[in-house]
Length: 402
Ligand SMILES: Nc1ncnc2c1ncn2[C@@H]1O[C@H](COP(=O)(O)OP(=O)(O)OP(=O)(O)O)[C@@H](O)[C@H]1O
Ligand SMILES: [Mg+2]
Image (cartoon, rainbow, N blue to C red; front, side, top):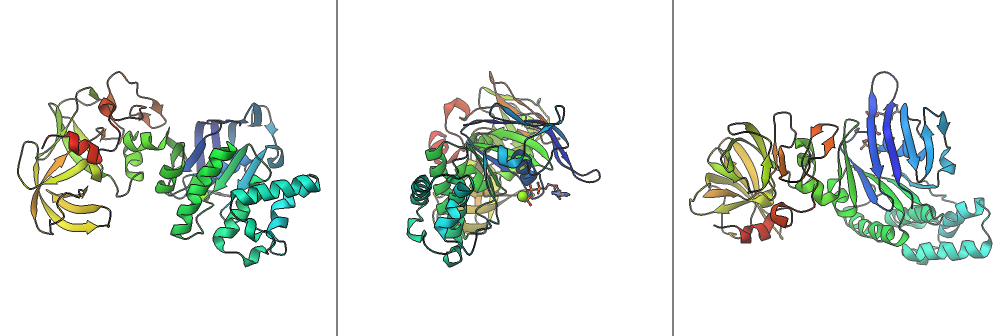
């Protein structure tokens, strides 16, 4: 299946507004790559340029071994000749055709024979679990079923590249969850290169093999989901991924730790910190990298619980720490109540710290920091320090001394 390469792709709409700025991105073949970022950051524009529906202002786009757009060469391959399947948020199904006719439509246009059309339609309908509705009109289907027909209609063409723009945003939460799993499975089965657009960080984390995080038309980081979560290249990336949001706490670099008031955030041996003693940094602590104790101890900070937020599976606390408020996930003391005095312990895994410009200044020794459009960044590693799994949490707690 083809890889997709964008080289120095620029898109300027009328006037000075730049939708996509000098985008350099290689989407690996067979990957499930998500373009992620807040509204207006240029995700749809990028996808439309890959599809050929939008003409870049500058740059080159290569799909597989074919240059489909090059300003220099004056080349622009029309959308229908790019070998792509497209699914958009608003999928226009033909209401006067049955599900079968809707799915078969593209094959008929291509004059694929009757027998083969039947086989392929039924195959794809089985994969998407819509065989039972093949003879129904699409107006008689639920939103989720219609969504599947829209995807089936594209998959039946067996595209090497599948482009999806927020295809699940019209569905309710449960259905969205089911469809995520289904899309992931389909990706496995077809092996197609998938480019998926969403502004939903959870969707990106759960489905993708790679995430391209964008902000205001600029690529911030391109990495596998858990790597992005554990090693955000900058403050924006740290803040955008993760729910609850990461705690960003000011601190000063000290020996073997970063001091955030009384709270000492340990700098594990082997962690390279690109900031000298006394330098002000912002520490990023995910809720699972903080925990509560009843007793004082070295490096702990006195804090007060301002609210208890049980979700059923997890216990979250909002905790006042000096002038800051942080969110903590800890399920060991379910009897803690609002107003209780506790001690806060930080167990970053791995350490995430950012300089005044918001750039990551942590990288484990011996690992190179990749360059990014926003400057030096964190390491490219799938694991936390010492090869421990990323994200802190229970495993990190059990390994920690307390
Ligand atoms: N046809 C157009 N003409 C002028 N400006 C446009 C056009 N399409 C998009 N833009 C602008 O380009 C920027 C990127 O838009 P784009 O639709 O790519 O964002 P997005 O990341 O897909 O956002 P969303 O999550 O809201 O769909 C925005 O500032 C938008 O206003
Ligand atoms: Mg969009």
